[in-house]
Image: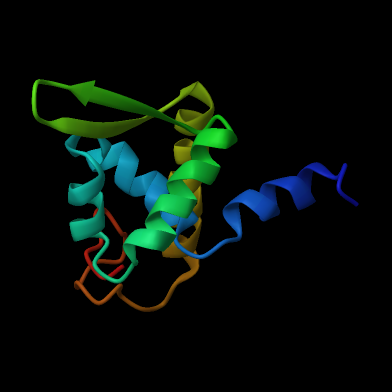
Length: 117
């Protein structure tokens, strides 16, 4: 079963926060760890670090470390693989919006940049 592509994808994406994190990096990853943490209000720093590391290990994101004399700043960006995954996430959002008979708490039928996560 470990050789099954669906199983492998579910192993990466099925963990809580991972899909939201891909979307957040696509939108705001250039602003760094603390910005992502602040925007994803309910995630703990420990879980965020774990998810970022796993996404990096799987070639979905790329971490860049910028060093100056006294400041170390990290920022994240999607790799080509990550950009394709973000396209899939956008398709999932469109699919859900098409068949959903409710709004998303913000009054919209389509999630653009949900602050509820």
